[in-house]
Length: 151
Image 1 (cartoon, rainbow, N blue to C red):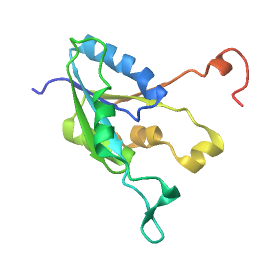
Image 2 (image 1 turned 60 degrees about the horizontal axis):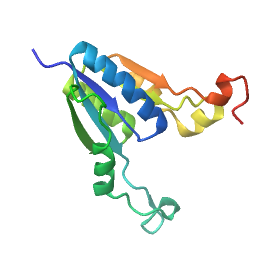
Image 3 (image 1 turned 60 degrees about the vertical axis):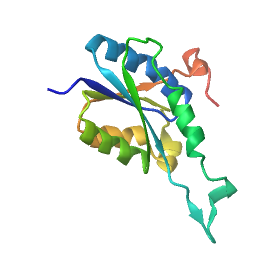
Image 4 (image 1 turned 30 degrees about the horizontal axis):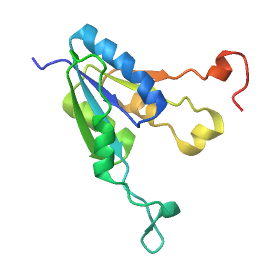
């Protein structure tokens, strides 16, 4: 029987940071390890080969260091890091099929309406295609929680 594992994809956002605490708690309670993953999207070529929006090509060494900084606060929770490249949703689902985790725990930005339609939702694509249960955690917007408006 394989060791218990929880897949934790991160995009280094505050939503991912908040979800890490939940992933860590579940891993500790289940005696599972965390597979902490970041999917680097390939740069988009535009026109004559320059990158879209003129952004410099991502530095994989810098991204690897950022990934290594994502770790459970509790040293008793085992973890490993994985940096991969491709479409984030497709790569997370591929890893879930390959690694066979008990579940995926991930943060979501909770976009709705036109923003979600235009940008898509990585979390939604993972939930739809995942071979295992997915727990999504949406960070609470403090303005909305106090009855204000987000805009």
